[in-house]
Image (cartoon, helix red, strand yellow):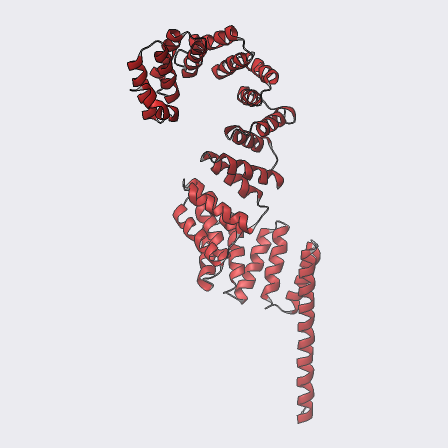
Length: 408
C-alpha cells in the first residue's frame, strides 16, 4: 500500500496528537497523585502514579512519588524497587539517591546507604540534604569529626533550624558548649517556636550559671508545649539561684501540688524561698517535713535556726546551730551562725572560738571581719588588725573600706 505526501502529513499529525494527549493524561494523573498524597489519600495517590507509569515507563518522578507513598505505608521494599527504577532512568536523580539511602539505613544496610549519600553529593555537590543525612549517618557511627564537617557544609548551603539543632547536639557531646549555644541560638532565630532548642539552651545556660537566661529559655520551652516535671525543676532551681524567690515558690509549689513530686531538696528550697519573702510560718512547715524524713539535712536545721533568730527565739536558734555542730563537726555554717549569734549577744570570746573553728574549715572574708570586731571589743587591737587584713586580702569590701580605722 502506497501513501502519498498528504497521507504522511496526516499520519504524522495524528501520531503527535496522540502522544501529546497521552502525555497530557500522564501529567494530569501525576498532578492528581501529588494532590491526593498531600491530602493523605495514599492509596489513591498510588493508583494515580501507577497509571502514570503504565502510560509512561520513563516518568521517573512518578516512581519517586510512588516510593514516598509506599514508605508512608511502611512498605520499604516496594519503595526501594521504585527508587531503583527511577534511578535506572535518571542515574543523577539526587533526591532519589538520598531517599534510597535513608531507606537502606532504616533496613540496616549501612554500606549501601553511605554509597547513596556519597553518590548524591558527587552528582550534586550543593545538595544540602545529602550532607545533612550523611552527617547523621556519621554521627550514628561515632565518626564525630566527619559528622561535624558535614553538618557545617549543610548549614553553609542552607540555613536550616533542624541542622543547626543537630549540630548543637553533636557539639554538646563533644563538650563544645559555646558552639552549641551559638547553634541553638541560630536554630531559634530561624524557628521562633523551637521548643527543644530553647530547652537545650536553657540547660547549657544553667550549667554555665547564667540563671536568668536559662529560666527565660525554660519559659519559652514551656510556652511552646514542653510541659513536664523536669523542666519545672530546672526553672525553679534557676529562679532559686537567681534569688527570684516568689517565682521559685510558684514552681516548687506546682511540682508539689500538680505533679505530686517533692523531696527534701525541693522542700528545703521552697522553705528558704519562703524565708526570704518573710513567710516564716510556711517556711517552718516545709522544714518540719524535712526534719520528719529519714534523711538528715543539716542545711534545713540551720535555716530553722535562722527562722528562730528572726522570731527572736535566741535559745532555740542556738540549739539548732549546736545540733548541727554536734552532728557535723566540719559544717562551716554551724560554727559561723552560732558565732554570729554569740557576737550579737556580746559573748565575744565564745564567738571567737566558733569563728576560729569556722575559719579552719573555710577562710571566708566576712568571718575574718566578724572575728576582728570581737577582738576589737576585747581590746585585742593587733589581732583585730590582722583579721581585717586577712578579710581585705580575700576581697571582703567592708574590710578594705575600714582598714585604716582598725590598723593604725
